[in-house]
Length: 429
Image 1 (spheres, helix red, strand yellow):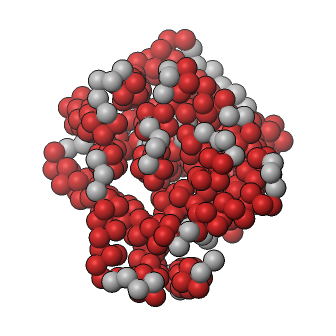
Image 2 (image 1 turned 90 degrees about the horizontal axis):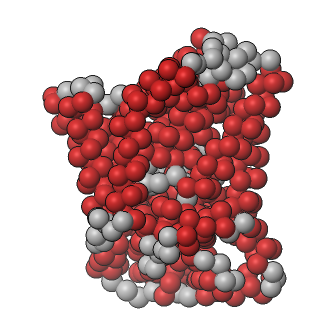
């Protein structure tokens, strides 16, 4: 490893410890590395940041962000919660199942774990507390279940990975995440069931068939968005980027015209919120592109690949090491920069091991989803504690069984490639 890269890492970690925003930390450390390598950093950093976001595929991100905000404010979360309650509320600890299933549904439709935590948590946490559920347990359920929406399409982070890899189809990524996302959701529900039995949590009221049908009818238009987006992409009617624009139009019609829960006077605020969120993500993407470039020209991917392959010739061992490294990274780095920085480093290793890049993308996303729930940079954990009005210290013990469930899911996703690749291969993607 060159002295320049050592300095880059030291400066980057130091800035993170000083609580400097991660995009600034990436940009500053990249600037210094380019200066020491003899490049004109003023020109190169600006150039690489501009080139990093100059991608048609990345246009899908602001549209999916906007559609997610419209869905969160437009009553879709409540309708999905009513459907989940009709299906699962009759079981012991039923509200925990309802919480998990609703987060899965809403997270997949909105493409945002943060939106799922705030939207679903705002409804479910007070209701679970009123029904006698431990508040910290409820926060742990919401926080972990919200991440399943990053595996079930459409998902912004899948688009980021597809762009970072340079070879992966967004449609293939979308399909590949469906079964892993469902698996993780089922594992979280299993934990809820065990805890409900041990805590003697009561069952809710059994819903009649007519109530289930009514709940499904109310949620049908919200669920239809998934069919429109995924079906349209697979049928070749539109690209993933065009699908994101269609998602915005559809969410607008539902929220403003049909459900009438978003007023026209609220749209400027919604657009501003979407713009601010988009700018943060794009700044991260641009800054990370510069760091990826300086690491590439310094042969870091090749060095890491050679180092890992020299440790063992077993794909099982090397993938376990990569997972452990990513779990460590996820504890202090947000998902988007982690994908952008470490995809160019670890994807060549996966290719040398014969691992499909689509499969590796799902492994990486499933891994970093755990990091969203862990301190010190666990975005979903912070949001969940904020919505639940509690502290990270009080929630963390309740998170442990859910962490274990997510880790079991990660191992299954890692070593059972058909979980990720069966659907893409079935449709020849």
